[in-house]
Image (tube, rainbow, N blue to C red):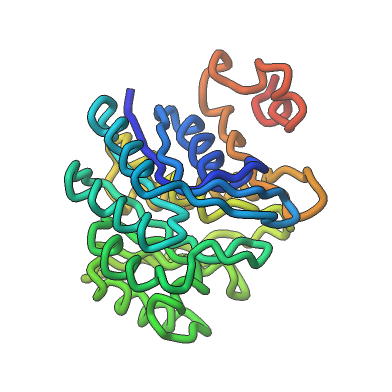
Length: 285
């Protein structure tokens, strides 16, 4: 059994953050573990409140995981302040995991700030240099690079600037541009463009969390980074296509849309609650 760790905030609505990451790990057949950095009161309509976990507790959670259940890959999501970032950095330097996927979460779909402005420099100086891959969306890429992104060439320029901060690889997600959903992968030598059909839906809560944790899950399974990103792109596209129209706002993606790839014994449709979310149709039960 391969193991993956998510270091991120909790989403009480279940569509993003720790909850989305653990569902994504499970959908890939990977055992998931967590280090919670913040607790959010959140649903499909917005974020009602945020309460950060102490840096000491964040580091203690990392100690508990790494010294007993050493992960094959690590995904980092919401890290709201500099003290938490420095605690995570201390843990990463001590335990030296190889496959670190950093999703620089800054603003939620509803517009709530999840990264405090003063923490931006700590993110750049502390976490980005320790990451195998950084996966910003367009807004996050603009903030990290200082470039206003209006198209593909701007995405390439931004990727170069973010790589210069110390990242080994950058994947800029272009989902907010017009046309196909185009992502650009840059490893310092070559650019790879990954386009997928744009799916018209309002239910996109947690897409960034899900995409980055899918990369981590595939790295844990032994795929190369480029192949892991390609597979994650396919997975998130399906999760959006079969997204869940629940709640009164921006609904979540369907993390178990791909359960038909697995045996019926492991399919969520065998659980009565699974039928509530369309698993019966997707899994052919």
